[in-house]
Length: 197
Ligand SMILES: Nc1nc2c(c(=O)[nH]1)N[C@H]1C(S)=C(S)[C@@H](COP(=O)(O)O)O[C@H]1N2
Ligand SMILES: [Mo]
View 1 (tube, rainbow, N blue to C red):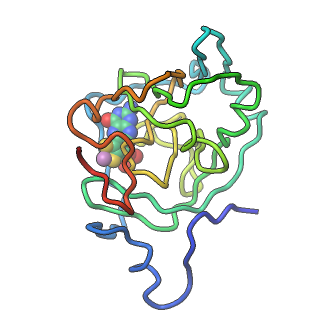
View 2 (cartoon, rainbow, N blue to C red; view 1 turned 60 degrees about the vertical axis):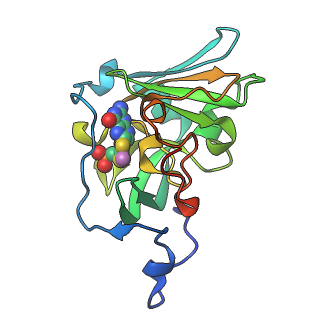
């Protein structure tokens, strides 16, 4: 049973109500990558949650699948003003991956293969709000869209959804990641137009 995580559907004009301020709908799926596209096979992919005490919780590809995937239909919003509605995703909810993680930190730094980073409050990753996504629109994620696996945090601007995700590191303060150091907002809520700061 897919999780429907947007409030509207079906009625005429509904797509306008689902479009955050300053956004325009697209039908294609643009690729936005700062730098090169890493070439990572599923067999060599690993994902680690590292706590402030240095404890590591790790998954390889098959361990991740065993945690259990779920289907999610959701909208995505890029800070460069495009939005895409009703995308079909498949991924592992971060709630499951954080089940055994003990931390007193309120923030995380997400790190990708290739060096990209982005910061988030831990609260934005839990309670059915974020996934390690492995498929989109019924196909395995392509390399250009972050395959074999990327973070998916659809309620925030899409730069928070780190492609080729490799690690989530707990941190006590909300230190800025790659785009955040370059002027993007620390949190990035599209409904509040938190684009820059
Ligand atoms: N590792 C990594 N993740 C990334 C990026 C990136 O450059 N590197 N770009 C971000 C930005 S700005 C956006 S809008 C989305 C774009 O994802 P897409 O190329 O699949 O549309 O990925 C985000 N995640
Ligand atoms: Mo973006």
